[in-house]
Amino acid sequence: MPSIPAAALLFAAFWIGPGRALYFHVGETEKKCFIEEIPDETMVIGTYRTQLWDKQTGSFLPATPGLGMHVEIRDPDTKMILSRQYGSEGRFTFTSHTPGEHRICLHSNSTKMALFAGGKLRVHLDVQVGEHTNNYPEIAAKDKLTELQLRARQLLDQVEQIQKEQNYQRYREERFRATSESTNQRVLWWSVAQTLILILTGVWQMKHLKSFFEAKKLV
Image 1 (cartoon, rainbow, N blue to C red):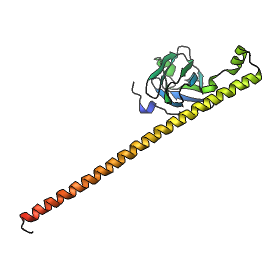
Image 2 (image 1 turned 120 degrees about the vertical axis):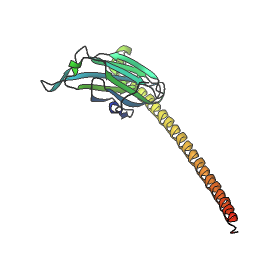
Image 3 (image 1 turned 180 degrees about the vertical axis):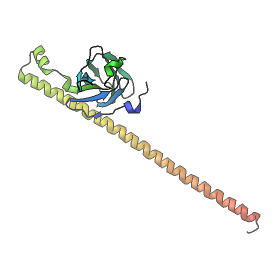
């Protein structure tokens, strides 16, 4: 896994919920990474668009078609899920198969220094998770659903997503409990080891002092 400079690493922890949008600035070779906590078997859709800083106008302008972004996504086991190059605007999709923190990294693939004359590239990122990735108007038109049927479909999807979130919370609790038990066990064994060391040190000191006094004929 390639190393990422600490200054170029940005962690943003998102809880599962409605879609959220943000923007950030990157340099020519800078990489930005975000952490998304996702239950297993959950679809994620991300869309982005870029803007370049124009020194003359003092504002951000739409990026040129020649500018591209590289998107990398890794699962909690650091396994690469997605590694693909896109244009100045793009949309990426993936489905989680392991619950936990997924890392989404973006960086520019451009080597044209002229494009970065202002030193700023603004990236607008929007991430949708779970049932929020569904296009319900399109689903209703495709399956010819009534308004009531569409609403029922939405509720079923929400219930399914809530169940996944609850399973993920149980998974996190189990991991936390296992970590706590492991830590407590290590602390216990360390306390036992310290006690044994103190006892052995005391016994050695007593023997050493006894030998010293005998040698000096004080006892």
